[in-house]
Length: 603
Image (cartoon, rainbow, N blue to C red; front, side, top):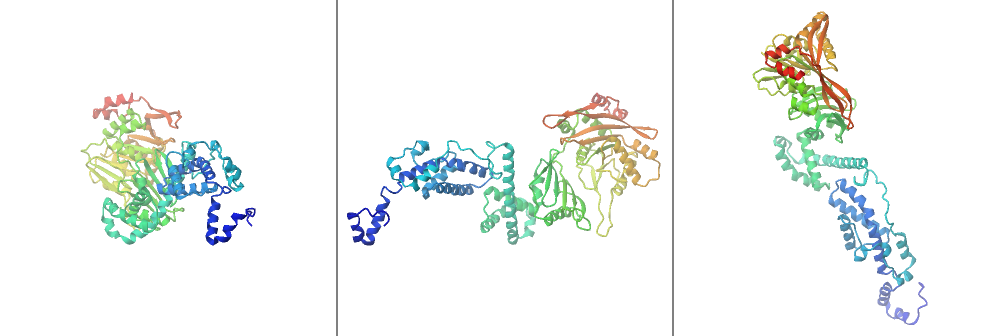
């Protein structure tokens, strides 16, 4: 009936006599007959499939390791790929065989066949004649189809599973690394949202706010692990540590911005709404993968910043200037003025003070320029630092103030206190915005007037940008020599024009010549600093004010920066040139015994 009718006699009798037991014996006997696929044919297919297993798994597993997957996830993926590869070749592996191939795939050595015959090339494996002659077509077809190529060409991998940098081009490897980091970041953000809501229900937030960060971290570690297990969220140990840090930053710090504030290479943090955050490193802006949940999340961080210094930011007062605990300056602007969501601009300052020696070694100025500036500060010259936004004016002002004597009383006036003077006798003043009723505002001009009654020897203004310039100039030429300030301008001559315009903002009914005469009599030196297109800050001018000729303020450049070209690394090439002129403040330098050092610096 099934093609075996030609067999008679002894073969038919047991079928009739033995009953169900005889049928079972016959089925068992059929499995051992040579007309079925022998076990040797299975071994041949395993050998050939094992030879091509490395090409199937190598690239994929390397990419998963580069993406930071946990060992358990990689092992699980390897098991699935091995099983699928052998099933496609018509072979179903046993549990022990599967484990053997997975272990070999995860080890450094390429996977091989289970026995010693696997060391041979698939093409040289002998095929018994009896097997070839008696094997059915359905068993022989997979062997012919699965004959491996000598050297299979690797196709370009997708961006998510890019080949490591040893094989793929560097640009593709970098793109794959960024994609993998973004995926890990997204997974951690999702885990944070889930764990944070459950964590707040189980902890006493009032008691947690009073604990030091180290103690709170130790107590939350075990609790976070329990929540991860209950929520069935699988994270490796390093990811759990990062998740705990994110939760602590949300509770005690500034949320997603906190890692950027801890990064010493970051000088500016710019948050443009919830989904875009830039940082400045080495003078260049870079887009980060830092994101917030929504506008409410960003606004919560804004309120956390301004509340620490007694200020507010809301729809009635959507602009605020503040500072962080480490002195970093913060500007915040929120909707309806900021159309794309709340914007936060943080200007970080290095924990290490930057002096003239470090600036000279970095190429911000020449050693001769550093010497002249030291002498100018020590001789109590009135100095104005001019430059654009982010050009380093405040850093240079901090360096100049380092030459102030420890026996001098200094008063600093700023909108948001960011100057860090090292002298022991310093009084720091800060302006105050109006309250909800629109009253109580204290402007910089009010503070300058009050500083004159505080017996200061020097007055330092963080930034001159309004009518307070009148009171500053009056202080400079009425016994407060050595005062300093900064303003925004592109060149020294433009700084004088801006200063003249600020005097006009005070509604003084005096002629232009009188204003210029007061500027020439009060100000001694203008230092121009500029952030150039290669990211480097350089002093482009040290300009001395020499007096008046008619109605024009006369100046002379002591030092300038001469641009020459661009190097192969993208850095600008130039030199700092001395004019060789005799400084106009030479008699004052002689009074302090610094005239010889000044002449040597001028060359």
